[in-house]
Structures are given as C-alpha cells and as structure tokens.
Image (tube, rainbow, N blue to C red; front, side, top):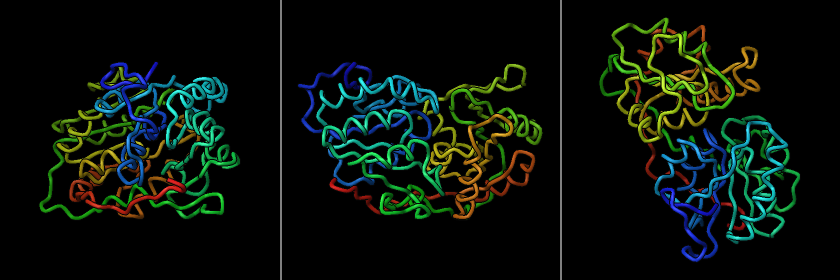
Length: 331
C-alpha cells in the first residue's frame, strides 16, 4: 500500500524527497491534526497516515494519504502489530519529520522515526487537559520524541506548551436571534461506544417541527423515530452544521472543532464511563474548559433543555484569520 491521491496509487518516484508525515487515528485525532497543520511551521510537502474511513476519504480527498490498519482504542497488541508497517513506511519515504496527535498509530510511527533519527513530534490531544493520554504517557519516555501540550497545566521539561487549536475561534452575539428550526445532533464516530442517552434526551425536548440531521455513530437507533446516519461525510456534515441553527454533540474535540469551524457555538454533552459511553470521563473536562472560554455550552444529559438550544442559537463563532504559528523543535 502506497501514498494515495483520491484513492490512486502514487510511487515514491512521483513525490519529492522528505515529506512531513502527519499521523492520526480517525475521529477527533484526525480532525485536530487537519486543523493544526496550517499553523505548524516548516511542513512543506506532506503525506497523511490514517485509517481508511469515510471521514478520512472525505476530509483528505485532495491529499496524499497512506492508509494504516485500524486499531481499536487501548488495543496495545494491535498497536504493536503496526510496528513492521511503521518501519517499512519510514524506510521507504524517508520523511523530513513525523507529527502525530495520536492515538494508536502514533506510538509505532513516532518510535520508528526516532530510531531512524528523524525528527518526531507528538502533540497531545485537546481532550487531555490535566495529564497526558495513554499514548502520551508512553511516548514521553522515548528518547528523541518531542512532546507538546496544548495547555499549560502539564507543561514540564518533557512537555512543551505549543498553543491551542482553540485559539483559532472567537464567539460573539449573533446579529439577530435565530429561531431553532434546524439542528445537527452528532455523537461522533467512535467505535464500540454508544451514546443513546443523548439521542433520547434530544428527542424528548425537541418540538416536532424542528428539522434534525442525526449522526449516530455506533448507537443503535433502529427502534427510534429518526433517520440516523452512522457516519456523515466530513464535507456534508460541515455544510449541515453551517446551515443549522444549533449543533448538539458529544464533548469530543472533533465535534467541537467542526461546529466552531461552521460558525456555531456547540452544546456539548459529555459521555460518561458509568453509562458505558467512554473509557473515562475526560469529555466532562473538555466541555467545562470550552464553556469557560465561551466557546461552548456544557450540559449533562439530564440537564439539556430547549432553553439551551435557544441560547446557543443566539451566538455565532468567527474563525480568527491569522492565529499564531506553532513552531516545533528542530522543525
């Protein structure tokens, strides 16, 4: 499998030497890196390394992509099985640097790069506010891998604060009150984890006349009176959010970024581990942090009501045209 453009195979002879490899698993990790890339200094030519999913096919439709096998969250054995793939890729492409926002592909690709004396950079996800993720806790002990936090709460000699992707956005009052007529509800595209409680809550509070686009991910909605789509292509979802009056979603960074990019102040509802909706409760931290920045409304499932939707519809978000550049070590 080689670098691809719009699904076509491209040989090493067709590319310039020394591309930057941008590595991420699907979902929020890929969305973060996609929006971070324009702010990273010194990238030049780039090749994406990510699983083959509807999201990556849509988001990276005009980019060079090397598809990596899917590894489930916290599947350490699956990540270990990626090491031969990672070594072959690094030897074949001889990249100028490797940059990753996690999760599973980050460990083998960055370790293979470091072993080959190629600059390796790990940018911790926006979802990790107080301490590194499992991926970060592994990589922080690997020599020659540079580790970065998007917050200053765990900036240390090992972790360097690089700035936040959320610096890109500014929330303002809407020029006029938007009636709640169109809503996007997305629970993300996480594998293995449902979020039925949010879908049921939204159903219970929305008036019948409201038009809703539902991205339901792994949640089984076959018995619910909705037209749910498991995964909506990235461009289609972005347009639906831009056309909506309100975006309601799980408190994943990909969902938050997509809503902010579309000019919408999202209502974020964290998944809870006690309901079997995630591995832990870090989404509650993300929602609270974004609410403190004025970039989201944070609500628990049982707190969400129609008034929240009306408040969210009264705000809009502007994308800052020239956010600060992020400079990587030795980049």
